[in-house]
Length: 276
Image 1 (cartoon, helix red, strand yellow):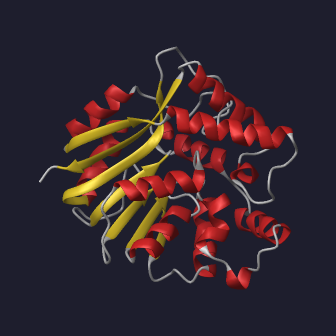
Image 2 (cartoon, one colour):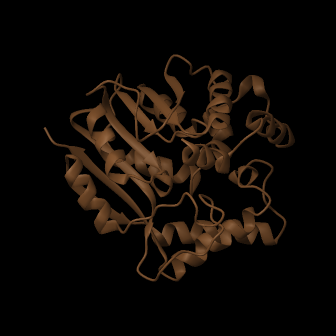
């Protein structure tokens, strides 16, 4: 539990909601008329942000009325987008209490409480019944998962037979240990990267099939470089994930780009299905 608490505190503590509200005011956004698009620059808190969520949603099959699980939901931005786009229900779970508290407030601002539920909990021990969900996704979560096999086994357990499972994240590259700090770790503590081939093998062992992995390194490198260019110009917008990365946000972003360039990390998107 101490390790999990340390990981949660790495991501956020304090009043995240107040921080976002202040940024919304600076951006000229009214809290009384917010849309999922207004919040997208900050509440899709993973590499490449909103575009990556849209790509993932395009790649899976979601029907109105489906119940989808967002593992590592952060502030609930992807959950709100998917619920709104597909007319489905989304349950999100995240280890970081400050994110869940802020996400619930933001969900209420969007009047999505009937479609989106956010829970605080551990992705390696999901508090849901067997075969509860029609699909599940985890965006940039696995880097902090110590027991990847347990994580995948829990995902398989709560999914219905034949349901889809989608992952995005940084895998371990071929060129050695990454440079830190990074968005998911200041110094390597709490970071658990595995190679893409090992990810595929662990998914298959957990009960998934038709595992398809896409190399997304070029997309992520371009996104990091764009953010760095804006930062160098002093042109970062009031609302963005840099708000949540801390005082060394630029160094984390620079290292994330450098690690991809040097082959130390290997961004991937993986989509598979639970065996029938």
